[in-house]
Image (cartoon, rainbow over all chains, first blue to last red; front, side, top):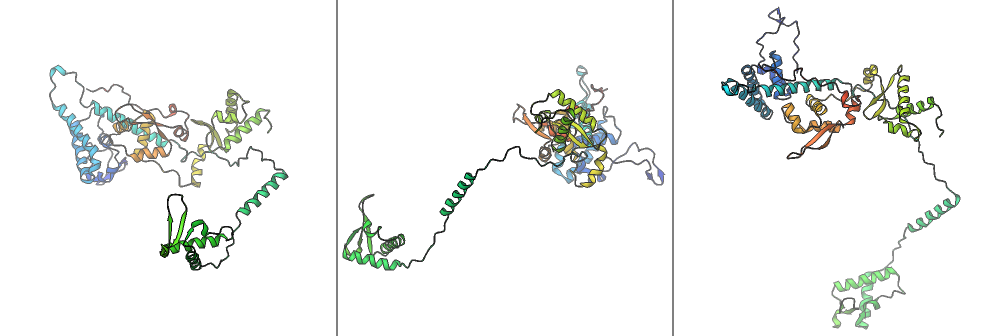
Amino acid sequence: MVLAINSLIKINGETLSALPQDLYIPPDALEVYLEAFEGPLDLLLYLIRKHNLDILDIPMADLTVQYMTYVEKMKAINLELAADYLLMSAMLIEIKSRMLLPKPAAVEEEDDPRAELVRRLMEYEAIKRAAQRLDAMPKVGQEIEVAAAHFQPVSQMKPPEVHLEDLVEAWRNVLKRAKLHQHHKLGRAELSVREHMSLLLRRLSKTPVLRFDELFDVAKEGIPTLVVHFLAMLELAKEGLIRITQQDAFGPIYVQASHSS
Amino acid sequence: MREPDNIAQMKAILEAALLTSPQPLALDDLLKLFAGRMERATLRMLLDELKADWMEKTLELVQVASGYRFQAKEAYGEYLSLLNPERQPKYSRAVMETLAIIAYRQPVTRGDIEQIRGVAVNPNVIRQLQERDWIDIVGQREVPGRPSLYATTKHFLDDLNLRSLAELPPFEAFAQSEIPLE
């Protein structure tokens, strides 16, 4: 954030040749730039540069007053942003107060309380400059265009050899698989569960107890008939017309008419 | 595939490989072109010759961190950018300052970055740099919390046209190493 000062600035018709020494930036003017500061160090540097202050001999009182003015403004606008800045205010005030205290003779060699702040400001400014230089360097995707001529890579592998027998074998496999996928043709068998229920009851009326496997004539009947027969048996059981019993697990299952017991 | 039997042919093979590669090619990659029948020293010499051959042309052969690549000479940059106005946007100051700290002070933790910049590190800033593959985590500092240590990548050097970190613009420290106070 640099406010470029044009050498031809005119104030009340007079050309301004030099910046006024007591240049003060009203906090209102700064409002727009609040977000532009990268932190308290950045703001401090800005103030120091704006006032042509010597970074190695900072007038703490002036700087602290100005700094606090801006921070108050920031606090009003963005509290979260102000947190880092408040820490810095505390540090500035601490330095200022330590400078005001008279030094006891015994510790005359004590470091300048500003030393740490100055060190940090200088380090930050160096990084800031380094960042600007990095930013100015040509980069791939911005200023540098990498050459990449088109090339369709050809496979290094030889295509496998194919003999006639392989082809025949492959064809056989296809046929074999096609057979597996044949559609089952479904014809509508005219089978009535009701009819089989009657059939079953009729058999039970003649023979009161039948073994489960005797019910199904696997040899003679087709699967559809057996299924319908089984369904009929379940249906009868549901309606309470027959009873299905088994003495123990895996033992023979008996079917009998309900009324016969 | 006939084996190249003269220098012109070897250079032509190198040239074709480098021109068609979207990434920089390292010496080891280029050696594969000759199926192990090439000395590294010879290869370097051929690359130097190739570089000289292209001196008067539109492209230049440069060496970056990951290897060699052809790129358009700087003079054509602004014309080429007209073809592609939607270029990579510039990074914010926060991103560039974070990058500068990592580049010049690596390996650094998030805390180191905060200490220098005086503000909390926005996780987005780190993410942007990681997504660009310019920085990565190289380890943890053995202090409570084991914070991650960040460093710049080879890709970062490639993108900035550098062979090594030593080629970064010198870090302009202040002239006084001892700060004279009073």
